[in-house]
Amino acid sequence: MNYDVKDIALAKEGKLRIEWANQSMPVLNRIKDRFRKEKPFKGVRIGACLHVTTETASLMQTLKAGGAAVALCASNPLSTQDDAAASLVKNDAIPVFAIKGEDHKTYYRHINAVLDTLPQFTMDDGADLVSTLHSERSDLIDQVKGGTEETTTGIIRLRSMAATGVLKYPIIAVNDAQTKHFFDNRYGTGQSTVDGIIRATNRMIAGSNFVVCGYGWCGRGLAMRARGMGANVIVTEVDAVAALEAVMDGLRVMPIREAAKIGDFFCTVTGNLNVIRKEHFKLMKDGAIVCNSGHFNVEIDLEGLAALSTSKRRIRPFVEEFQIGKTQRIYVLGEGRLINLAAAEGHPSSVMDMSFANQALSIEYMVKLKKRLDNDVYPVPWEIDSAIAREKLADMGIAIDRLTREQKQYLASWSMGT
Ligand SMILES: NC(=O)c1ccc[n+]([C@@H]2O[C@H](COP(=O)([O-])OP(=O)(O)OC[C@H]3O[C@@H](n4cnc5c(N)ncnc54)[C@H](O)[C@@H]3O)[C@@H](O)[C@H]2O)c1
Image (cartoon, rainbow, N blue to C red; front, side, top):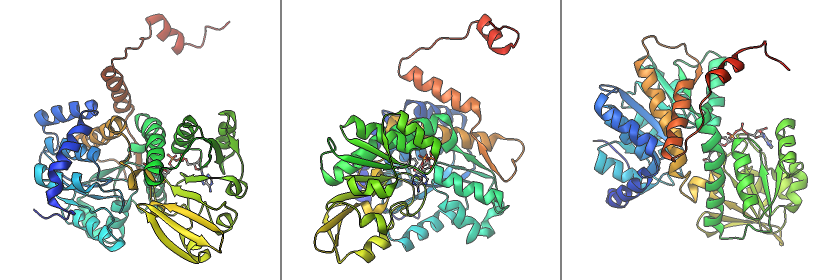
C-alpha cells in the first residue's frame, strides 16, 4: 500500500487517541455499525482531503466499514496529527498522505497522491482537492460522481465554480447543515481556538482585550468563549447585521484600525483575506498576539508584517516574534494557519460527531441516488440533518416534546387569529 506519514511507529499512540475520540462520537459509531452490515459503499472509491485528526480517523473507519476504498490527505499543512495518520495506515490499512508541517510542494503532492487513487467521490475541506482535480487533473473528472464539502471557505469557492459553469460534478454542502455549522463552527471553533491560543502562549485571557475579527458562526463562538474566560471582547465586522448582533450580545464593535490600538489578542475568523494589514500592525501595542482560525492563512498579511520587521525569531513552538523598530514586538501564532488545529487538536470529538455524521450520510445519499444531480452545490437533505439532531439528543439522554395533533393543525392553518 502506498502512503506517506511521518512515522509509522506512532501508530500505537494514534490508535489509543482514536479510541478516545470514538468514545464521544456515538452518532457516527451507530452509522458505522449500520454501514458494516449494509455495505453501502461496496466497490466505491472515496478520496478525502480533511484535517487528519483522530475524529477524521473515525470517519475514515466508518467509510471503510461501509465497503469503500478510501484514501486521505491533509486539508492544511499544519493540522495533521501524525499519530492518527500512522494508525490509519497501520491498523486500518487506509492510505494516508499527510505529515504535520509539510511544505507547499508536499501538500500538493499528497493531494495528487489521493487523486491517483481515482476517486469516484471527493470529500473536501476548503476545496483544494476539488480545485486541483479541476485545474490540473481534469482527465480524472469524468469518473467522479459527486462530493461533499466541510467548511464555509470551501462552499464559497465551490459556489463560485458552479456560478461560472466550471464545476463538473455535484457537491453537497455539509457545512451548511444546521447540525454542522450551528455546533462545529460555533462551539467547536470557539472552544478549540481559545485552547490553541492558550497552549501556544500560556498567556492570561482574563482581563485582556480580545479582538475577534468576523462575527459569523465561528466568530460568535470564539467571542462567547473568550468572554467566558474573562476577556473584554471587541468585534470587528464589515456586515452591518452581524455587527449589530455583536452589539446586542453586549460586545464592543469598532473598526480594526481602532481595535488595533488596544487589543492584546487578535483572532481572525472571516474567510476573507488581509483583514489585519501593515497599517494595523503599526498601531498595535508591544507584545500584541495575532492569530487566525479561518480556513486559509491569508487573513493576516504576513508579508506586510515581515516587510515592517527588522528581525524575526521563533520564541516557543507556534509563536513567532516579529520585531518592528526598537520598541515593538508582534507575536504571530501557528504561521497564521488555523490556530485550533495548529497548536491544539481541533474541535472536540462530540461536535465532530455531528459534522462527520453529515459527511457519512451525505456520501451515502449520493451513492444511493438513482439519478445524478446537476453540477451544482446542494444542501444536506433536511431529513439527514434533523435525524442527526434527534440522535444526538437521544445520546445525551434528553427528551423533547412532540407536537399535538391540535398544534399541528394550528401551525398549518391561517384562519385562526385573535
Ligand atoms: N478553525 C476551524 O476549525 C474552522 C471551523 C469552521 C469554519 N472555519 C473557517 O472559518 C472561517 C469563517 O467561517 P464562518 O462559518 O464563521 O463564516 P461566516 O460567513 O458565518 O462568518 C464570516 C464573518 O466574517 C465577516 N467578515 C468578512 N470580511 C471581514 C473583514 N474584512 N473584517 C471583519 N469581518 C469580516 C463576515 O461579514 C461574516 O460575518 C471560514 O474560513 C471557515 O472555513 C474554521
